[in-house]
Length: 530
Image 1 (tube, one colour):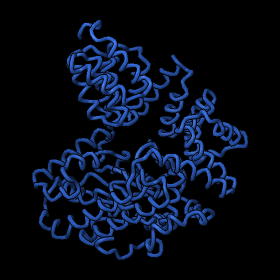
Image 2 (spheres, one colour):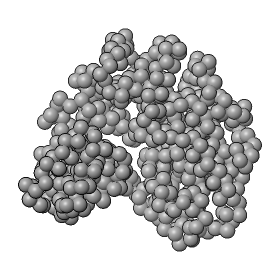
Image 3 (cartoon, helix red, strand yellow):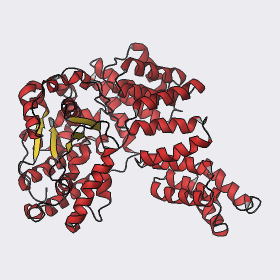
Image 4 (cartoon, helix red, strand yellow):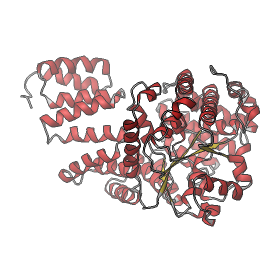
């Protein structure tokens, strides 16, 4: 590193600006300093932190790796790198950096905390729980760590312990909106009058953060819905969504244009000319569709079969799509060799989440509906299950849900209706150009008559019938999604009428959905320029 006495004022000014989040001030100061001292690892790390704050995680990673080339023992830079890798869903890479850090600083609680989170991403739940317990034993007054601990306990089915952890977080910080929402999101906790009063008081405090505010609104929406006050519940849901929408960069037109391009690119001739391409492995079962459409239930049913392993919502197919230039039009430029490589790469990436030697596994990322053409091209023998639910029931369930990440379409009713419509249009196109390649499960039909539809589902996957699939709620496994507690109960129909008390508020949704409502469970006839 350079002599710290040189240009100290410039670097100090940059550090102060970064501390105050005055990024427009910090960036030119850092760039000016680095022109003079290009090998100062401290300044490179600060510029990387700035890049990370504005979402440029790849730039941050490049900068941090450069800082570590210059100063391999720079633990602060390595800790930043682990965080940036974690943010990019590269938990394996993050763990490698964290293990290096912990070898040097074994008692560092921040490293242990991030390692627990990374292990959770990879399915190492028990090890993650043990790490959280170690952190909390050493430093118990950390509400956000208690909350993360609660998330992990909930995932492995220890609901009572998870609730206790969330309650402990709230006791330490009553305005912690995410902890309140985490209780609400269990779908099995009913808030009492004291809870409602505490959340209302926290929401009335003008000093709370935006994040606390919208989480409290979502939680209070559930509380008032439970009490049968649809108007008051909707007011909170709408407020939470509107506030969250201000933080989301989502363009419904971009989704429509994406589907337009797929419809134009992935024609019947496109697939006929590429028959036999891709990796022939039949291992993956993709369960996709809209969020809140019953995909977790389908995964739980399949994971109850002795030949199928349930994993989680894997980020790998979208990650592969991002590596294709000018995607989705760029599908046309793939070679047979590249298609096979991408299929094999998907299997390698997914293997990180595997815990058994069962021959099949489920990837239940709902948003993979956007990548069905890619899946058909690179993994032609994979099974694709489309989980579909009544449009108003499904979309309103999304509107009530605050997602930890992604799902930018879900925070405005008109965005949601357009997104659902584009999803149906995409799948109708795939049905037309690849008939019989997607098996559709209609949620209401499944819950009304489980056995015939479960048998049909297993047939579509090429699996023999197994009676355990009829009582999937008894299957013990980790479930990371919002439906984690619901799938641990017998199949029931109750949620499909939840939108009806809110019908007067749903006109923007119904207008955006259009004839998709009337045609359900079939798809309307879409014109090419829909």
